Length: 314
Image (spheres, rainbow, N blue to C red):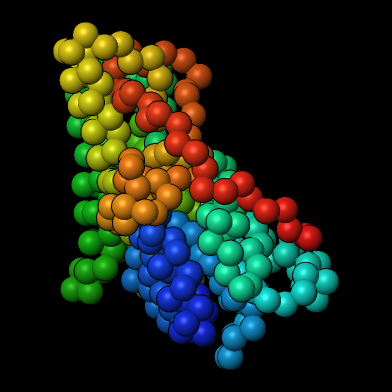
């Protein structure tokens, strides 16, 4: 999963990208709104956007408005990073659904603090494993097998919807999207279930004869679901290993810690924040609400934040 950095200033893009990569975040860059939309349309696993305001062709707010107009991107977190005085644009933040603001010149600690806050609120692709297992009353092996089947169904549906030689009809695609959404909801995959429901509504609204296909947002969310499943499988393996060693696991990694795991691109440099753990160091993992009988992972020891968020004038 990646953070998209949109700025027409090449130096600013590079500085922002490198400052985030130093703490392990994976980033992808775009020099214009057009480039950014091309990346989004490819289905790149982008989970957050950092954008400048003043840019040629399309400014940051017009870009945000177009992002929000796409049902699959309507909840995408967007951070404004600009040198403009807040009084010049503050009133537009809420109107365009801007998640946060970080000033220029780039302040890495402040920006990472804003990212950390957003990750605490961003819905994780899957509900807590122990809740799903308790609700469904199935084994952890069966649960993961069902998640793998869900991913295969999504891949198959996406491929068939894009098959030019045998195009799917509008009603057939809408019916299958709705059916898969129900399966996703049963497995606690609420995030992609919501995307599937929005896709269903969009497809049903297509005019007669209009090509019926899925949007890039479904591809992106499918990739996120697969990665989330892998992370939970790893947690489960660590839990089994811990119990074999006589240790008792009583809590799962927090949601923010999982997002960090998903966004980690590589080990940060030895002198970078969080280098001892290989994770971005914004905040410690948070415990879940209850003990985890299976499919859990010992929460990572809290690491000091690289810096507390600096209050902005907004």
